[in-house]
Amino acid sequence: MHIDLKNLVSISEANQNFSKVARMVDENGAAVILKNNTPRYVLIDYNKLQEDTETDQESLEDVAARILQRHRKAFEELAK
Image (cartoon, rainbow, N blue to C red; front, side, top):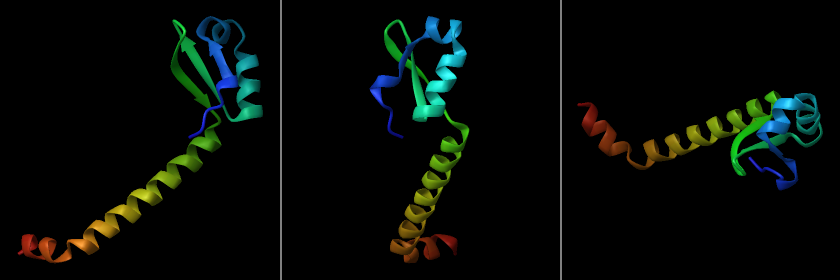
């Protein structure tokens, strides 16, 4: 996930003006909330989260298939 550093918001501002942070997420896809001037939380659009999760899951399945194919003989031996 790519976070634009222009979307930094202090935790006190997020607490006092959540609607502004929500608009920022609507416009830019994400906001980083700082606590003690350190990035601590990320608020992202739910649909973006689902897209990223599905992409990550597909990648995981591809990696698993590649590992299984590469070491198929070893797995067959272990299955005996």
